[in-house]
Amino acid sequence: MAKESTFKNMTITLLTITLLSSASLGIVYSLTEEPINEAKNAKVNDAVSKVLPEFDNMPTSQKFEREVDGGKITFYPATKGGKPVGTAIQTFTKNGFGGQIDLMVGFLPNSTIHAIEVIEHKETPGLGDKMERGKSKFSVQFQGKNPSEFKLSVRKDGGNVDAITASTISSRAYCEAVQRAYDAFITEGDIK
Amino acid sequence: MNQLTNFTKGFVKENPVFVLLLGMCPTLGTTTSAINGLGMGLATTFVLVMGNVVISLVKNIIPAKVRIPSYIVIIASFVTMVDLSMEGFLPALHAQLGLFIPLIVVNCIVLGRAEAFASKNTVAASFVDGLGMGLGFAFALTLLGAAREILGSGKVFGMVLFPDKYAMLIFVLAPGAFIALGYLTAVMNRLAKKSK
Image (tube, rainbow over all chains, first blue to last red; front, top):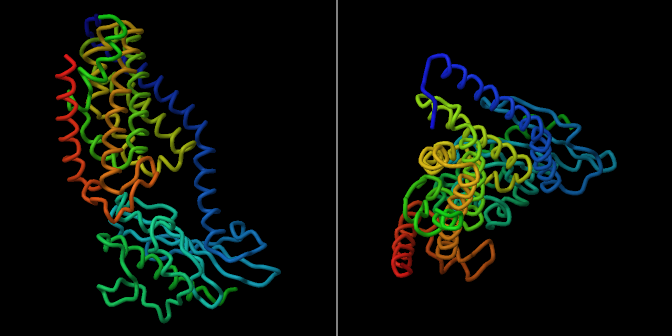
């Protein structure tokens, strides 16, 4: 059974255990750092190519960032044959049901929404996660719409968006994030 | 106690979920689908096995008064390893379970087995105990996840069984977790009683 406790052996034991575990955690961290970053980058790159029409440049290497509403919005300009074909904008909202939601919104040069992809969210599985493309038709209704005439808020609030059933908060947050991307696109729109 | 009963007790007689009713937070929180339950169960199994083995190895060196903090540090290290590895190699599963993985540290089963079993038994017995308990936990979570997924969205392991307009949404939500767990516990205990 366990030894008798003295001040000296308790201190030494705790010190040894914490040292050993921090060392092993350091090793695991350095092993997994690269795959974690790769997985995150792959997700963003994947989202960029999904929300834009065909392009032949490298939008991820031409990205630039803007500070908006205490957060970061990232622009990924896409061109084909030197001509701009659209911009993917990584946007966010902090008002989701489970906190922050990160979206990738693809705009055509005439500020029409081409497609929207969810990058990260913590919404309720089975309810709010229907905002993901493929889980419901929610995100499809934005495609081909121009926010200058398509009001980006749910019908309950007088907008044009059909909310996800039982997930009005998630739907509102989604609209807010898209609106933020649109505003940023219009502000920065003349650069390309 | 021989190794076989040591292993099987985690499934039936001392199943952590249906009999001991330990670790209810991850049980109710993560079992929205069968695959989530399985993932959480296997992550906990890994922590249980590794924690049990290491603790039974060092049980004679650790002074009695600091044993709980020592166990917690050992367990927390393994949980963080699981968290990091899952984020790196299984990002899709991590997106679903990420919130609950750090909570394995405070899962009563893990510390409970360390204190009640691993600190008093040999390395081999602790390994078997951790494996049995962990797999029993994983089995219970998968079963609960599958039941909720079938009733709540008409799917099992992502395969559609019937259109989700006939499903009862409540089973995906928190109240459904309590209802499903209650009925499953009742059924499991009835079966366990019969087999005795």
